Structures are given as structure tokens and as C-alpha cells.
Amino acid sequence: MARSPSGSGRPPRERRGGDRDEENELKDKLVTINRVAKVVKGGRRFAFAAIVVIGDQRGRVGHGAGKAREVPEAIRKATEAAKRGLIRVPLRDGRTLHHDVKGRFGAGKVTLRAAPAGTGIIAGGPMRAVFETLGIKDIVAKSVGTSNPHNMIKATFVALAKLNSPRMVATRRGKKVGDLLGRRDGDQSAEAAA
Image 1 (tube, rainbow, N blue to C red):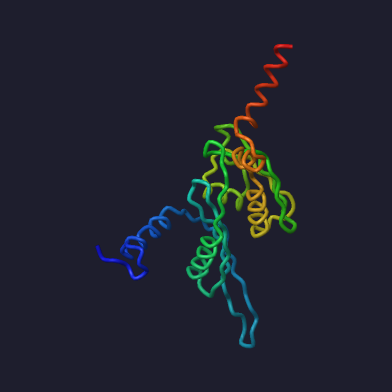
Image 2: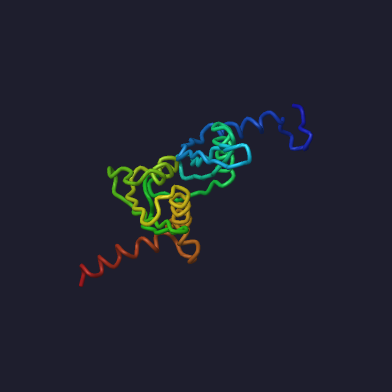
């Protein structure tokens, strides 16, 4: 077996192949594309601004913006920015949120609510793209304030960053998950016995 220059013992080709597999499983969605004009001495110079949301549909999601003279180049730049800013979001049963949460960015305010199975994605345009690439199947979301896609997406990401799973809360408090979730059942059985 040929040793790699780094001395890790693994051929360089295998390492790169793993990265490629990871990129192939990411699903990207173009949220919006906007034509912007810059007025110069000879007239107007047009460019395109794109917003892209990218995710693996299993709890990882990111967003990015890109601007270029051509549409494909703007989308490529936005996709690269989204890959650099991926975050992990804890999901309950791989389909919804653990708890309700609010997020705010600029004039954009969003409320995300966990929903029972079969509800579907009830959300407006830019937020829907985030939830689809994240892998959420049941959620109710409401946007109040601006309808600017930049601020709506950023407010959604602020809200998603606030989410905690029972395991995260238990480790922070130095308890077991069963202690946190089992307490509710114990209180009900104590009330029934009294």
C-alpha cells in the first residue's frame, strides 16, 4: 500500500473520495435570484445576487448568498458560502422540532412550532426551503414583519440555533434523559394514587 505524503498511511485518492460522497448527499435549493444594477459612466452594469439553502435532509443545513455578473456563477458562490456555514439541528424522530422556538434577525421575526405526524410543512417560501433541505416533515411556522428573504432565512437560522434536544439539556444539567422525561409520568402516577 502506497503511503501518502502526510504519512497517514491512507492513499490521497480515498480521502478525497469521502469528501465527494459527502458533497453528493447535500441537497441545495435556490431560494431567490435578484438582478441588481450599478450605474456607471457608460450606462448600467447588471449583476445577479442569489440565495441558496443547502442541507443533507438529516439535520444539517446552511445558507449562503453570492453575487456575480452571471447567474450560474452567483449560484456557485452562494452554494460555496452555504457549505462553509452548515449547522446541525436536533430533530425529534427525524421529522419535527423538540420544542417551539422564536427567532429574530433585523425586522424579520419567525415562530417555529413542533407539529404532530401528518401535518406537513406549513411555512412561507424561504422558510419552506430551509425545512425541506433540513429534513423536517412536520412543522408550523409563521413569519411576522419583513418578507425580505435574507432576513427571513437568517431569523429562521437564529431560531434553529436555539433548539435543544432532551439529551443536550440532560448533559448540561448533569442528569439522565430519563430523569427529565420520566418526571412527568411520575407526577401523574402520584396524582392518580392520591
